[in-house]
Length: 223
Image (tube, rainbow, N blue to C red):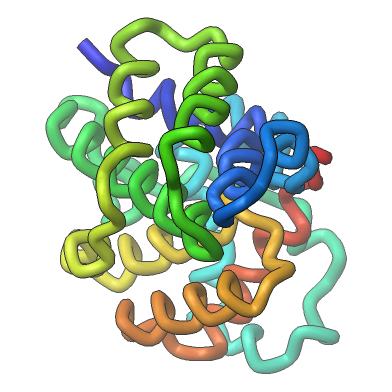
């Protein structure tokens, strides 16, 4: 059985989603595929597990936004940038551990959000698919998780389904954050995609700002 939490952890820890993005723009060669930077999440966050890590990052950003600090970026103490805690279990940010169905549903939604963002600046043709699938194989995933990722990479992007999966403002924030984690935003298409996603998720600009800052402070680029 596929483990969406583990699959998400592998994507977040390897910076792989951003690498996939480099091969998704039409006409790129396999050697150019690996030149696209992805974002690798910090070790502390990653130890929480993929779903909890995304939840923790979104939770920290949401807390700052909720207390009004999102409107004053220069006033945020440095310590607040680095402290990261797991959101309360059973909150909208993190389904209970005794509800594996909810865990798997959220995990799959976040994986699909990352893949959609990675595909924002291009298309996927047969040759590029082969290169990307070889890189997936190099991640050393369990066969079930590898099969899920390959299948998801081959599916058309369905933004409506991704947006409709946000059944709360907290999950909407997680979907945006996962999408932002997948890429280093350096093309007009990626910027437009994220702006459109934020708008469709009904995320306030101040919260989007905090989510973007959270990604910048808790991740590193993986060349």
